[in-house]
Image (cartoon, rainbow, N blue to C red; front, side, top):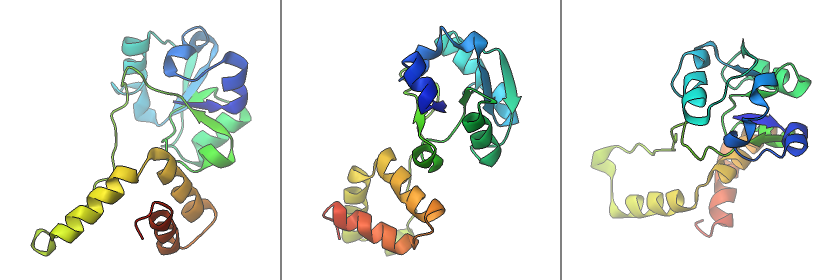
Length: 163
């Protein structure tokens, strides 16, 4: 769940739990299926006791959702934590202490016959240092700043002492 920095500051929001006193006056936005998914409105009601004023079906963490959130058409939205506009639009991804939303981790896929201990050790070292914040910054560089993905990845590895 994501809100604008202005909303987070005004209502002292850091966690989805903090929405409880405000949800009934808020419009929430997200993809159409968010209305009926257990990790959507159903789960938010069950796990956090949240009932929103209304639901606005938009897109999946895309331009419609981001525009609705930044314009104030919706006051909270389902935005992926690695959506780079979180940085550029000064959005706040609220913590999910009750784990309504499952983790969606980056998982490397490797051709089994090509797997070596060097590859395993390298992937494990990268995995240990790869955070949501790092992914967010790399997504911003590649998607919004149009940086070369290889250059961005090499920069991450170097910054983490891996390259």
